[in-house]
Amino acid sequence: MIKSKIFQFWMLFTLLLLNVIGSYSNSRIYSYANPKHEIDDAEVLQYDITVIINSKNSAEYTVYNKILIKAQSAEDYCKVIIEESDFRSVTNIEASIKDMDGKQIKELDENEINEAELSPGFVLYSGNKYKWFSLTASEYPYILEYSYTVELESLFFWPDWYPQRKIKCLSSTYKLILKENVEFDYFRIGVEVDPKKYLINSDQVYEWNLENIPALIEEDYMLPENHRQIALLFNAKKFVLGGYWGDFSSWESMAKWYKSLTSGKYNLSAEAVAEYKNLVKNIPDDKSKVKALYEYLQTQNRYVAIQLGLSGWQPQNAVDVYKNRYGDCKDLSTLMVAMLDAVGIKSYPALALTRDDGLVLKDFPSNQFNHCITYVPLNGDTIWLECTSSYADMEDTPYSIEDIYVLAINEDAGELIKTTKKSASENSWNSSVSGELTTKGELIFDAVISLDGNQENYYKNKLIKYDSQEDILFLKDQLGRVHSNLDIISYNIEMPVDRSGKYVLNVKGVYNKFNPKRAKRIFISPNVFNKKTVESLPEESVEEREFSIFYYYPYLDVDTVNIEIPKSFKAAYIPESVKLATSFGKFSSEYSFNDGSIQYIRTLEISKNIIPVSEYEAYVSFLKDIIKADKEKYVFVR
Image (cartoon, rainbow, N blue to C red; front, top):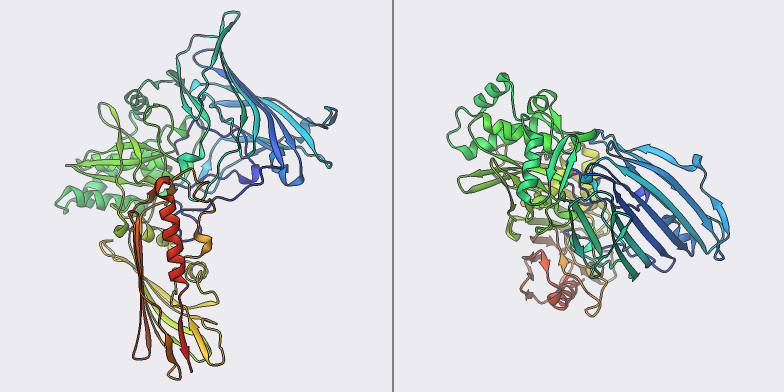
């Protein structure tokens, strides 16, 4: 795991979760709606951060927060967590509660400060600890006031400024005190003010101040990078971390620093080299060799992280990863590079910021990365390898590393390179359902679902556990979103051994109460698996919307449905076919009824996964038309 410098100072302990690279959301969706927050029950009265650069190797900063808590619903803001590690230690934690007249009601006792170590299942040992506390009162309103100091052993961790919160902030200041003349740079996000510059004795001081900072805008289906709307990001032009000197003056210089961390890490034992050479000895072309070695890496190793000290950035030796059969993203990428080098194929590690965390700021060389992948520039046919995934095909990378800028650590230099992105047709869902509607209103069906790209990756990731009970619960959740009361009778997966064909899911099941019995009429909605509803619409009006719409990836859904109707019913109404086309997507629904069976074909293509705000009105109109079409029902009379 590559640790990013960017750290949120203020978060809830219960919400402190680490993301597994390449993980997916809990349902088959392509972007998400943001939860809405009550912003009137609390406000930040003052948020200040004072950073003191003591030398080229050390710094400290103090955070001061003063928050007005108006109701119990805002007490999450009274839970404070602060990270510690081998390079950062927390001191001087103080907190108190005061009434509106400034009278102290409660003070934080030292024994109320808790310590915990966070080591998720995929981290064997992280070395990270957290100090946290919660301080509340029983009568509202009240003011929570707290501060703490963090001592840093490297300017690599130069703290950024995030004055904007989910609630309004009346005042915020970032004060930078240089006790030694250290070169630094900063990047503005929504901050227009210039710093005040002055001296305190011989110390240089820079001070930024903002007043009446609005609450963070949270819109449905936002680009991840839009979640940072007001911020200053900092870096030291030169730093030292764990004895390794680094330089953020350019991407090339940062690449050289990372390369120094990996020096001597790509060596393998003679036994390992012989094993890899033997694996590909009968494979004629390099691309097929890469495929064979990548799949071998996936089957022989697992993703587990040991992130003690410098190992958050420095990989283990390839020989040790080979021996232990596990590692984190940079460890497995290091082994992959060593494996390819053993058979004469050049490849390189590439530092990445996963797409769900935003995009790399190209004009601000700094540690913006949280992941490492492998870059294989194979005679112009570039291959990107996600080495932490045990299921992704070689040329079917997860969406988390698609269409992003990565820092490729080449032999002589480093450069930002953009990764590829699959088209909508390469992220396809194609279902064929044959069913029979019983006189009891049950739909007994057989379904064949063929998946490609990120849609395939999603199902593979969920079904790879080979736990039949968990698999059935997952399939009931996914395939029962439109019509509930689903029973899975049986299922099986067709997955070609050589991974060259499509991933196919065969399901037999029953939708109970698919069509509730009525006296003389029945109404049948032919959408079995996919359907848009009003919940699919973004909440913001056309006038309110400020940011683009974001889907994790472009996609194509095609559903073909044939349902046999009881012979005692005749068609009274067959919906009209619908065709819609926009610059960002297409939709069609076709209806017919022949030989006692419904025939329905629904196609939805989202060809652009980023829809600019200028097209938001057209996008909402497109969705509303789809919702209307998806509501259509066949009508039959006895």
